[in-house]
Length: 112
Figure (cartoon, rainbow, N blue to C red):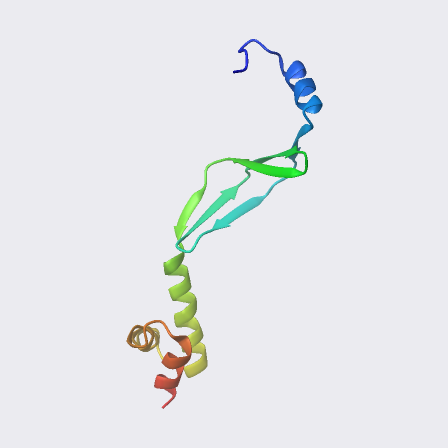
């Protein structure tokens, strides 16, 4: 357990002796973390890198905007099917639904 009254200079010295360095990454504009279902977008985030004997850990501080990726992916797929077939948004969406999201199958169905 670390004593609560240690000053930052002493803490930095202790960390250096342990082979740990901490640096800030300046001028960070945007960080995007993508999972299979969501996207976390940090604008103007603060990023700190801690290097402990070659193992780097990144800490992000900020408030993310969280978006559902399924909506964006579906919109991109619909647009692609529309562009390839010349069909309407409704027709492209229905074809994708009928083909369980298979873009190639949806394009083939609408091209017949």
